Image (cartoon, rainbow, N blue to C red; front, side, top):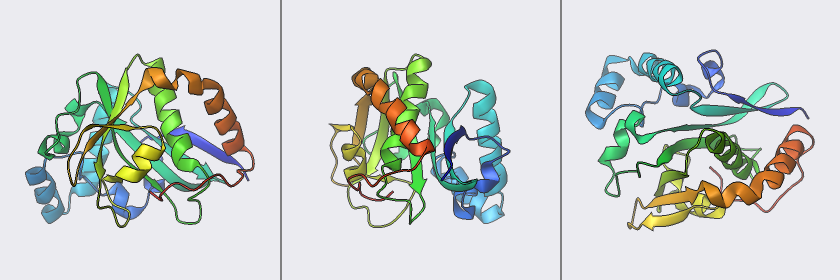
Length: 205
């Protein structure tokens, strides 16, 4: 199967699931987000957010394709671009970090190591751009796919808790620790682009 990761742009935003391309959970503060949903403008707001971040900061996501079908994606940006993060009890994200906002892998493609490859790809991108770390808010009571990632998954791909909380701890992945991943990243990407063999399953995104 042909597999590839490509930057998220307005051109391929439509390849994301409908609920994701019209979701502005992270992109707007809670009040503005609710207003956008009531007004039916959340998809326009999402497009505007992606356009603005691309222009100001650069690539803010990746889409995973298998034989030209989108089977996963990830969104990330500096905390200044993520208003919702300030609403979390364990905020703020550290100034030297980029926030891993959310990620998703289609059922049927979970348990193949795609979650780890996605995080490694983000780490590689941010290392090139001079950042020190990735931080994320986790959900300790995660039960089904949602905007906040499960804590177990974040821990499994290398994050460590920096601010505990019973529901939404903040976790951090030091990018300098991923320097040793470089060969692993290349190997993982080669495997992703070829036939993915089953790897120990992570908790599904």
